Image (cartoon, rainbow over all chains, first blue to last red; front, side, top):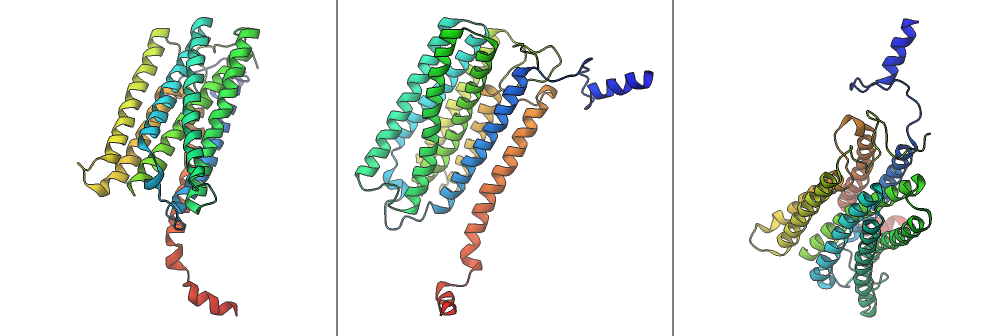
Length: 213
Length: 129
């Protein structure tokens, strides 16, 4: 009898970290959901790493077309970077507001996040449209193919994130701060912050390293 | 699975969740993260365009700054810490990073040596005939 009790205790604290849970069972749904989404995000980052690898290999294969330093405008990239960074911050503010169930600050934080995300997308879209208009579309060279794939893939993620953001605002409006809505909000915040991390890689590797070469 | 929004004390933390803090402390965490990230970004853009530093060091500096900023984002925005309640999240992150380094590092390594390890094209072409 005492043996079983000891075994149960050892099972409750498998890593001997001093946290003993008397009745270990399935973790709360919030942890399971967020952990699953975290694993998805990491697989998304692995997918982005393939695009990064392709870009790193093909960056010099310009086929007589423009090099990175000839087409990148650092001022636009700086504005895009600041937009995404600030939107990550306001997204964090919105998640705090959701946790304390403050509707006003939640809507404000999400609205500012949406606005900054849209500014980012508009700048990126105009950059792409300008390149295509000058004849530097994705089919011009292997470098431009990998550039459009990598940056465009990130842009698609941001677009999807904005749709998700609007859905979250609508769900809070219609259903209030229910437990399931809060779980989705937490996953959205993780997604948005992860996009910002990917953008750090994009602006460093593509724009800053590329414009120096 | 229970449907509670706040976990009992001593449980694991969901990724993105913090330990119980007051609202002010949590906001301060984001402000610190934002300031650090802005500083690192500004440094990156400055370093990329300057001729004040030794030019061959610039790519390395940019990569180091990028990794530092990713770390800042992970700690202050995603709240991935070294605490025991974060072990699962850190392990998943470590595995993800392993795959990322294998993919990027392996690709760059192999493709950079491809020319040296392949016979030149004029040697391949006669073989085909």
